[in-house]
Length: 168
Image 1 (cartoon, rainbow, N blue to C red):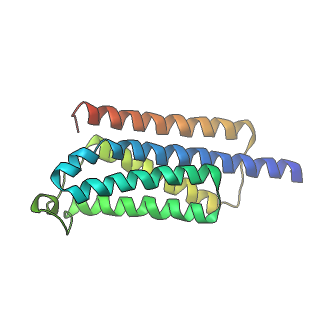
Image 2: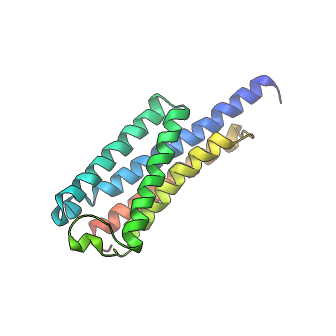
Image 3: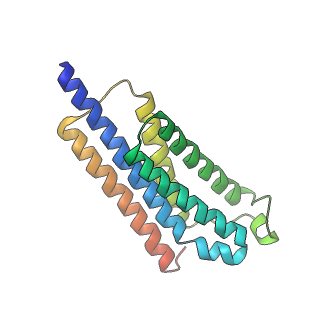
């Protein structure tokens, strides 16, 4: 592979990661937006947590587009893994703070699972980019980008629709 072809492959791989990560972060933010009022009614600090998380995810998505690099990648991974850790804690033993109702284990719904998929997708895309020695590109890169975006969009729409219909 020539140096020019290698450069295009690197750009294509990075584009796949950035587009997919941005879509996953915005999808997570959309799902989190649907639960702000519910959590705020239970405990205002919980609602503010979800509002803050939504803002962080949107700002990270903007950073992925505007200022991509190792620092932004690290922040995406830390935010996604931190969000997953809080979710796992709330679903296994309950939160150690807040009203008694929050200290009990919560059930798992479709929006939860969709958000887990989105958070894991963001983290894995970034970790794969950071650790990848192999770069892919060309038409296959464009197909992967479209597949990633469509998959993230489908998961997001499902989660938002289920939450909106009260099926969670």
